[in-house]
Amino acid sequence: MEESNIIKLFTDFFERYYLSKIQENARLGKKRVTIEFNDLSEFNPELAESLLDQPEETLKYAELALEQTDIEDIENTKVRVRNLPESTKIRISDLRAKNLSKFITIEGTIETKTDMGIQMTASKYECPSCGNLLNVLQLGDELVEPKTCSCGRKGKFHLISKELIDCFTLRLQELSASVKYGSYLPVKSVLCKDDLTDTIIEEKMIEGAKVKINGIYREKLMIKRGKKQTQLITYIEANYIQISEETFYDIELTKEDIDEINEFSQEPELIKKIAEGLFQGIYGFYKIKEALTLQAFGGVSRYDSIPPVRGDIHILLIGDPGENKSGFLEYVNSFSPKSVLVVGKSVTAVGLSGATIKDELTGSFVLKSGAIPIANNGILEIDELDKMNPEDRNILHEPMEQQKVSISKAN
Image (tube, rainbow, N blue to C red; front, side):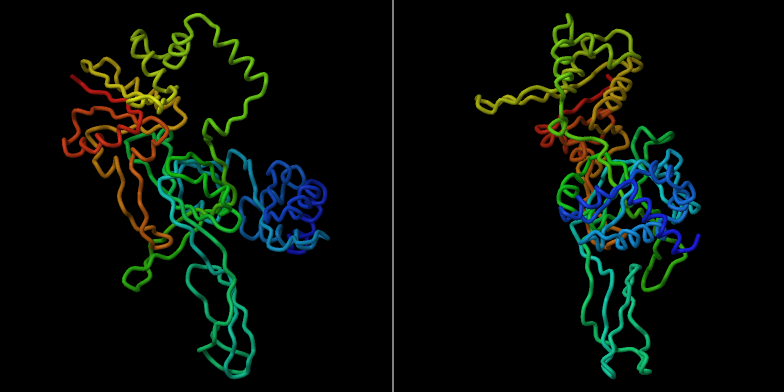
């Protein structure tokens, strides 16, 4: 389709489905419009398919269509798309060259987040010879300067102004439940910019949070010692971010939910029913099930007593090989909203605490969180504790005062 036709289709689409929402966002000063993919697919299947195959160009046409409406203060509004079809969902480890420049959906756990940075999107240069102004779009990672002027001058133009946006980078780690073989969890960098750097969104992007991201799979050149490499650096440019897990404080209970919880709380042998429901695949071991259930729910901390009483407990499982200790940890890892499972013989002190690494997109150094900080306010499961090096195991002493830890040890 021609550019004018695409813009006209998007204009009709916005007016039919999202006109009141766009007007409300413009009134509140929000520079984003979030659309449902199903709405676009219902309106024009060809346009929806174009969004998946050529997202960068299609989104630009959509944003141009927004600016052609009669709504005031709509300039520089970004179009965000949620609920992409299941066919776009892909594991981080399955990303390939064929996915480049496509609209995809990935899920993972935030491993690190860089500090807020600033990126140049456009610049304006002045020609010293004739005073002509030259506008240059900065679409890539390297600064682009004008080479010639209409007066014939070549190079050495004066930079007089630039357009800037906020941005930060996430390192997203594959969900452990998605890994079929081995214990290595691949990671992928995610670039967040424009309205995705709003304080409300940015504050939720903490280490250990599980997120689902719709974005464009991009690449940039790798440069070593001033030479461009044939191998590319790949990353996701985020378009829409969904927090897959919220804290208990973010959950809003309806009156029906509260009534149902109160009714269930009166059940006889309540803890036993919950424990058996959580560990359905393991027969017996009721006391262990009860202990792990109580640990998962936690208690109420009492800081007014001496000494203070914490609401969290640590559990050490000791038993002969084959008694399904690892199975218990895997169950806890599957039903806990926030948890990390590591194996003692393959984890180090750095893997538990963290390390400083260089971000491949920004070049800045960031702190890569280990299992303990990622599991903050959740549960850390350590399998085969006895196979850890004593030096690595010592890192647990201090953090364990602030963490809930389940440990499996063969006797």
